[in-house]
Image 1: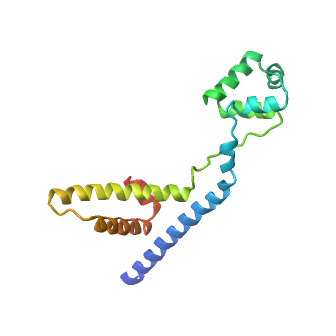
Image 2: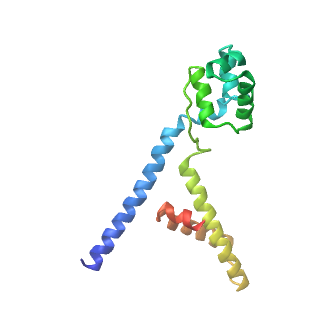
Image 3: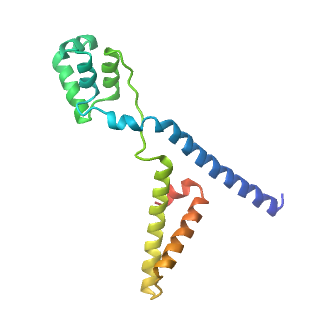
Length: 169
């Protein structure tokens, strides 16, 4: 196989990898978008107490439904508030109250924004090192040059796989 053809194939594979990564991130972002409002509706007292209260279900009855003692049910509610409860215990409590436990991650903004923020962090690290070296050599860049350098570095990073960002943070 000739070198030109081989390089063309590698370039196409690189582009396809980037497209796949971006589409994958956007697909997950779309799926998770519906859960953003869950963050605001999370009860401060915890889900067990919240659902138990809505059902007017005494702790003693929840304990009975779960096959545990009342002090254990109270301790379970405390562990949920302290964020030390296990998913297994939460699932048992949910089932006892006719609910399903749904577990997941909800991005703070979007996964795409998160990747962009990490790219920016990497560019800032690179620029900081470069700027220090250049200032030691009395070759500092002006603000416009710094802005242009940052833009070019970001564009270069966007042309690379996201894996490059994770390897270099």
